[in-house]
Image (cartoon, rainbow, N blue to C red; front, side, top):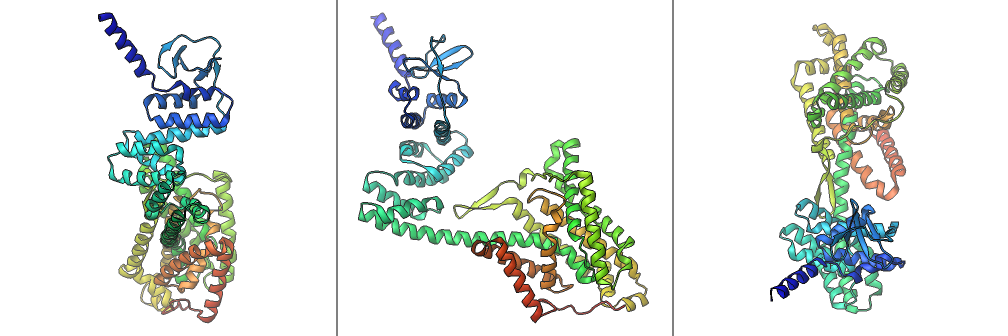
Length: 523
């Protein structure tokens, strides 16, 4: 009796280990590519530890087959039977299981779907989000299983939508109709092709009607999402233009200097940020995420010093001679670019976002607002507020406004006009350096960085009104939004041309820009 009981226990244990049906595994050792892909989908649908272990081993190239089509996971000179889990010596005639690109893609897809069962919420959420793009009918049972086990309400809601997406391909008309109706609240643009196909060619009238209603609701929701996205990215572009143009609004708007080297001051600010990042990586790697805190004052000081040096050595002799100023600063811009190429090389350098600026927040289902752009928008507002306070609430600002409105009278009452010129140009250059810090967070930094913003900066300043801070802000916002709404319709190049034509016509009608300056410097 005891022997029978022991035999039954051993038999039960053997059955418990036989987690994967050998019939499911057999096609993997065959030559039919469709059957092999289908077998991977079936293994993934098991959602067991054994299935995950086998698929991971296939991904790593650790699965071998015998001539009789049995599969073994080989590691450390031991062979584990993929069907029973029994561990033993290496069988004779083992041959590596061939995994081509198509099968590898199916394995990756199955492993990604199995992350829906991970104890880590972030992994489950990422897996479900990814499945929204490509859920298939073969994964429907796996998704339903994950839905039954999921306890997080947000992920459960996403899983319901994913399950409905998979059931769009169901042969059962009732299931298809239910899936279409369940997706009426979705914002997934990837559903449009499937819904359009169902509207025109589904065999069931009720499914076609439901698909038409869902498609209409989806298009309306996507249009709203696109509009809000364009508004956000228009504001983001406006903040970049504002940071690029704000220093120019001081040097050109208040001082009347056509500074063609302004873009290179942006570039110097960006390279200063790069050097701060390198310094933190070498001497303070644990505090690397805070290198921007050092880069901001460093970029301001460095570019302000460069600007003061330019003003004292070249520009001070060219006041009141705009053409000579343009030519001289253009030559300086070429010299600065060549100096940077000599020091750092002609290739772009990478300035990485700190961890707290990486990623984004998802709103309206599919619209991602990048953290780095949100931070730059806030930063631009703070810089504008700081410039306004300096120009309107400080002694320096009082002297700047006095010199720019009536230089001779300011000199008569004891104001050192030469010193104010130097400090004003330094302030505008320092603000350009802050703009360079912001630009470094949006892309790579290279010697030609400033060339892409000099024309836009002049357009912002001229459109807003020479010497007008409020006009600069409004012009930057208007140009940023116009760019983002015109680009999808006309393309980037035609959008730029249209905006330039508009500015030319506007300046012809209103030469002073949006806001007229109250006074000008008198020599």
